[in-house]
Length: 63
Image 1 (tube, rainbow, N blue to C red):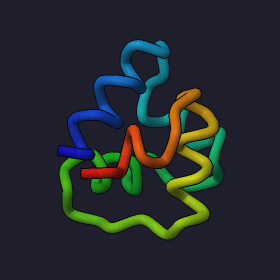
Image 2: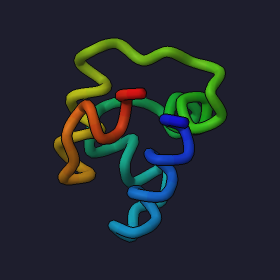
Image 3: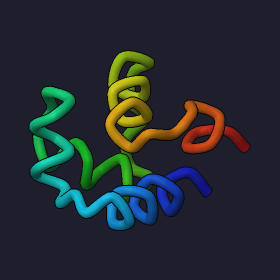
């Protein structure tokens, strides 16, 4: 499930929700909702998350 992949990768990279959010220009609450599976991010946000977590879109958001 994508939410688990994002959180797992974020923690491995040593980012808090707040620090990741700042890097991609969203709020901590947005990252929290994405990780909880309660928000479907735009492609721009997905690309930002993937870039900062050094991952591919497919790795984080693919089935």
